[in-house]
Image (cartoon, one colour):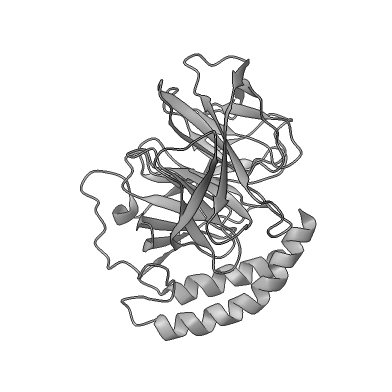
Length: 323
């Protein structure tokens, strides 16, 4: 199974073209999650209030809890979310509510491939003091304009506070929520760009200039929805399902499910970094078309993606069955 997933990653990187693929030499371990309760870390989000702290949560069937992890890998606080249920929590992001910083948790997984008529995103205030506490959630129901689908990637743009979800299946897409989420009705998610094959998490850079969607094998950096900037390889992980940016925007923090899972720090190329003056210099890919490349690799990409699709179909079926 891991070999097949690795082959899919290799083909996808090759199909993206040498100008877009970047292999990061020797990424280091930023920290290891030491909390024995965190066995299926399925999302990471950088705190805006507490330097060095990231938030994570367990996958489906876990408690409705958010864990604040310090830079040493130890849990600084357990935030219990009231009025919420962990059916299949798959993503987490930090944004704002009317009062200030807020944490968004996405109950967006659908391993049955479209059984859920809508998904739920919970919003809780980000606490000013890190201590074990219970936070009341506001629940937002969302549905896709083109029908139910499985997803594991939740993003919030820090500039606009707009929420996005990237679907996981073939022909995956990035979906945009309404500018103002309503708790009293179902909100419609509209497709605004493509997403990579088997997307497992995503995050915006702290300055909002770029965002990343990860797969099991690589990080896809975008300058805007549908505008692919770079693909960066990720370390081999047990089941890589989480990613966020470092506070300075120069690196990615990439995590995995499993007990005592390491979180790697992956440096970003200069044009994909979040520092001032790092605007995208490469031509963007056409929106919704992962095979469109300025380096003339469109045909090669299409052929390779066809091969990937055959093998990936069986990988996806196996992953769904495992989940």
